[in-house]
Amino acid sequence: MKSDLPNLLLSYSNSENPEEAVRDPVAAYRLLRQMRNDLLYIEKCIQLNLTQCEEYQNELDSKIPQLEDLDGAASGLIRLQEIYKLHPEDITKGKLSCSFAPMQFH
Image (cartoon, rainbow, N blue to C red):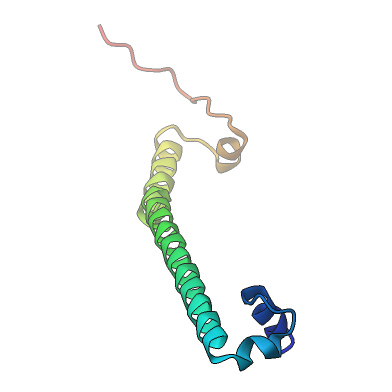
């Protein structure tokens, strides 16, 4: 950071020498004021981005399946396996043929 300070000072002053920029009390004051304003602006932008990130994270959290959703899906698979007497290997391969004929209603 210390090596970056002269470049930073030069970017805020009209002088080519950073030491000259801070020797003059008025120039030093203007330099500090401008740096402060810029840093406040940067902080504000960061805060806005953080707020947007938090909102996006909250939206994602509401859409991500919860543990209860996974438990429910697993329970449903187990019920299907038990009712239709399916083998787990067949389920994982997508083979869901029933071992008995479907009921017919008259």
